[in-house]
Image (tube, rainbow, N blue to C red; front, side):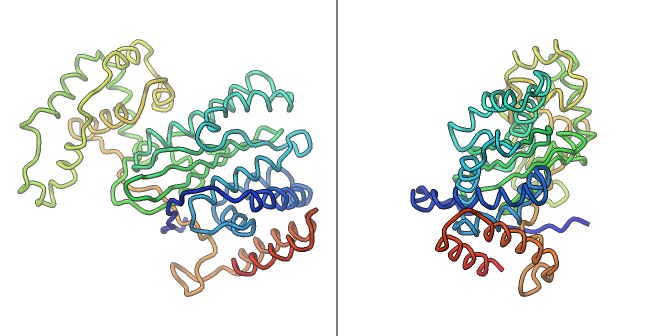
Length: 367
């Protein structure tokens, strides 16, 4: 059974000092060298996609465990440290403007790895879809501002991306690892962040019936959809305060109040002409964003009775437990293994004595 809980990542402004980032790159390169040599590229990809391992690595490299910056700065250091030609492993993308260069960088690195055009397009699709899912299908109030796509010369891949909520000043990190069945059936390896009471998750297996209804809706003449949407946005469909206090009606009426007020009907006609075969194909279409996804999900729920998942998919980041037994006792064997792997990497890294000493001290505090 998957263990779940909460990990908070408050937004921290500013940038990492140059002296620290320089040492983070140097130390991370040494750790990468050892892990790839001892365990292989696929295993390193698997470990970096694990939220606890990633968090531990960030701490060892010198970042606060609870800072949103541990994601962006650690990924930046890893990207600079990893040389695709040498390791058969690469990272594309980054924070802000750098994230928009991901597709071009995948193509460039794919040529270094001698990938076929179809393989490069496949990886580019995976990058786009992982971002599309976390920006449109999972509506948790966090806007993506960081996206890195990690992949090996064997074609395995992972994603580490992060969104921010400017109202709460918290971040949320999304971990992906290739090998799942579908982009719209619980594809994440983990999601880290402050838990939210109600999240529209159209990428959940529990939303499969709603997904099918949404596809049926867009494949019918848009005139029917216009009528459905209009019936839910008329004044008489809105709730009263008495109805809000009625627990039996609460979820239905509150979600109705969140119905988007505008919909791109030209885009709906384009989707109708395209006739998507399934929900993933629908979601992958250009121009299908959060408003379109939400409107169709609510119509599916309130008119046709097919409810989407409103459960927050966030998962706990501390896979080894807490020292006080909360939320469960420390699994010492797992923690010892993680610690030993990072310790081995530090010990064999090509860095100076002082850097090793500081890293070991940080590793001790993580333990």
